[in-house]
Length: 312
Image 1 (tube, rainbow, N blue to C red):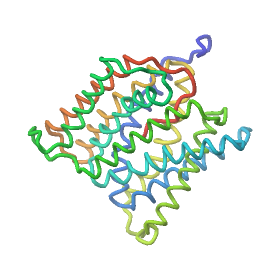
Image 2 (image 1 turned 90 degrees about the horizontal axis):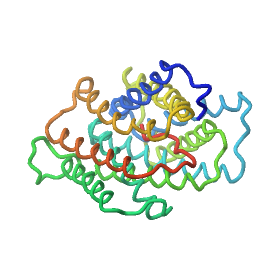
Image 3 (image 1 turned 180 degrees about the horizontal axis):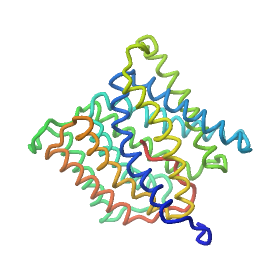
């Protein structure tokens, strides 16, 4: 962090605005896209294009190509983050409203805390941490359970299960990334992972017959606009703002997007996407975000490599 070259406050605030509001809005953009296109193919188009642009831009700026072990590490993270996490997110958003999907993925800090405890031994279970995790589990239960009578229909079980697996996959990737050999340039690392993830998603889309079912002429203008928005703003602009902020603000402060994104996503889904906003959604969101707040204030951030993004 270079305090002597700190940029003007308006630039800092603009970058925070991007990761708060642009990333929060990407959940609705995904929802719009997957209702008009096959989900894996839509995800593949987003990440292959964004990865290719970022990868090419880094090469044009003189960044070196990843080396042997760096390709292996990037491939593993691409599988966990883009193939598993994002692939499942895009698939689930055909079954689950975009705001609920964002709230479900807000459980990631809890899963990261568990993974750090079990895999890296950098955290340990305490009464307060366990209590925070239980609050988050309670929030998920409110969203999914038919026995909890708070109004509104519970979340589709298959979609919710996919989102939980997605959150787990992202959490494992975030933890093991600290032990992997990756390109020194975060932008090159991200571009490589997105490009590889896009290729993996393309193979999965082809294997599941999504190319056969896809008719470009039947896709709405709104869906194409959503794809462009996700590529340019969700992936490239959002990631650039995220990495730039990490040079001037603490990871804990930058990580506050985890509290804001679900609120933005639920708001966008309600006002722009016509998604329901009942007591069930509000209660589940409050429980999960309170859990995230407890977990992030109880645990100390590890000062090694920072995971690429947070699933938007």
